Length: 242
Image (tube, rainbow, N blue to C red; front, top):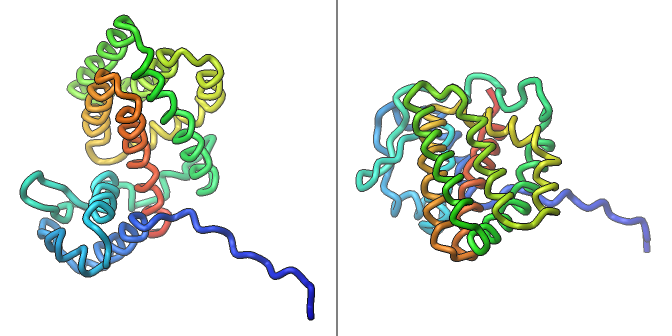
């Protein structure tokens, strides 16, 4: 018997919802549906891709995040009227700290691990003053959106650092500070998306509302959902090169 070890294939990092998003993105790029056209119903898409509704919705959120579709509450999803700016060139790999798909992926994974737990601790330990600070940041975000988005990325980062401070865990906060430069770049790139700042403000407002419930489990879930939106979106882009 040949005892030579058989090389193992790398474990895929792409989830089922990401696979669906990639396939849908390919169909959109191939112009299966025209700009402004309504996509098939969720029930029909679930049958086509043989997935559950929650998986499909995560995929649709990814495409909405990168500007390929528009999701309208109670109406369904529509093809964007204009091609997403993110599909024009590899903006995710523009010169900076993050220069490869692997680097972006690694930082997103690290962020998920650290910030999800920070959110849970914040919900449990934050003081009234901590919430006042977070409230002010979110109000400043809204003002920044109304004034064209200038300074929004700095506020976005400040929001996440304020959650870390409110967690009461100095070690986890230092870990977040250690990847601060990469975080700033991720945030800046996410804001290049159509209506990126407006969407980010709504997500942060919703996240803060959950933190105020002082339910650590719900806070972790909310943070995970918030961070995964960008991670899913960039994977769609990497799978659909120009």
